[in-house]
Amino acid sequence: MQEPLLLAELKPGRPHQFDWKSSCETWSVAFSPDGSWFAWSQGHCIVKLIPWPLEEQFIPKGFEAKSRSSKNETKGRGSPKEKTLDCGQIVWGLAFSPWPSPPSRKLWARHHPQVPDVSCLVLATGLNDGQIKIWEVQTGLLLLNLSGHQDVVRDLSFTPSGSLILVSASRDKTLRIWDLNKHGKQIQVLSGHLQWVYCCSISPDCSMLCSAAGEKSVFLWSMRSYTLIRKLEGHQSSVVSCDFSPDSALLVTASYDTNVIMWDPYTGERLRSLHHTQVDPAMDDSDVHISSLRSVCFSPEGLYLATVADDRLLRIWALELKTPIAFAPMTNGLCCTFFPHGGVIATGTRDGHVQFWTAPRVLSSLKHLCRKALRSFLTTYQVLALPIPKKMKEFLTYRTF
Amino acid sequence: MDGEEKTYGGCEGPDAMYVKLISSDGHEFIVKREHALTSGMIKAMLSGPGQFAENETSEVNFREISSHVLSKVCMYFTYNVHYTNSSIEISKFPVTPEILLELLVAANFLDCKMK
Image 1 (cartoon, helix red, strand yellow):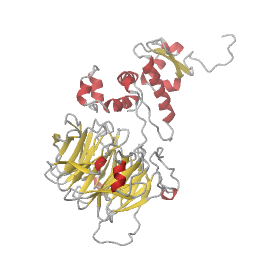
Image 2 (cartoon, rainbow over the protein chains, first blue to last red):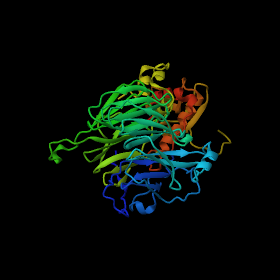
Image 3 (cartoon, one colour):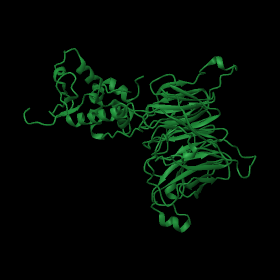
Image 4 (cartoon, rainbow over the protein chains, first blue to last red):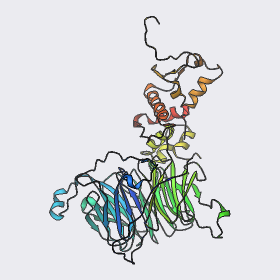
């Protein structure tokens, strides 16, 4: 298995007016679902929106562009040049959504001079004081300001179906549900967490919401009734990142306790733990073993995971194996995400840089392709009820290791 | 046969370029041997020491795989060979919901490479 190779690194330019109060961390990175844009909160309250694939100038000589974006159906009248969003305060969470022609378009025009383009993209940014700003990607225009949270909005997640429901996770210990079809009306507050909520993620089939917090617990909520389904216990420290597999059949959570746990979200069963131990103990003088997790994400075809930890490593894991299959050195990593069509992993760091790495090239087996397609609409219980042999059920429920 | 001008390679003999896969409902799928070898099961059947009757004429009968599933399996063979040992960006392999379970059972039986 080839080690991830660094394809490109982007560094923020010196800000025009350096504000000592603002931090320079890249807390979040994100690709739009169609792979045509990349968003990077580059610190100093700025978010850069960059069209994907990157222009030639960013890619070091000798590398081909490893990824091509799919047809950009959302190309409106905006130019494909990069956009800079000045959010006015530290940006923590980022999330993209397609924005189809809104039903209340006429209402929009009456109240807001900036009517979103037909079929465009929007980006939600979670800010330091609890505000959420919604921007139109192609033009960089501010569309909405959502108020409600009392503290940092650490993470955001849009329904993957494009229904314009937004979930936000905050240090005020709540999650909130916002309906962007109704001018960003807050439709629900989810309480229950006892400490900062670090992350939220909506399952690809839009049925479940996962949230994780400082008190070591992971909550699963129903996206239909906005009620708590179950609590997942197991982590020994703050849980800071979570992600569903592309078929919604698996959930992974990452914690400061140096572990990533893989769960069956339908049954709450803990399937495995991925331990982040030191690669080469001889190299490290310190007695303290620092490999708190910062971020975990699934690859688009659902067979690999990428993790970022404080021990200065980006790790790639194959689903069935107990140890990583590849490593890449990265300092001060905070976040990671896969390019939606595979082939590239983006990471963000404490000094505001983003890096793009080669991801394993995956040719899924026919069995996995069937599993992924079946699990996109079958729950674990439905699989267990199928008239198929036990071994096949184990395969379909990801119990084969 | 008399009169036939063009040949594309046949299914006869152990080194035939093509193999014939026959579904339960009698459809015959003639695919490149190299493609069919994507299946560990077919590979074993075709290279076995003569214990399988199919070895002679490079044809395999699948009494439990119907044509609508076997055709998809053959498409997967092509897909797999096309992207293996190349660096072209891999495109999605479409699977239709109606045949999924049967396709999974067939894929399991045929032991089609990779995870």
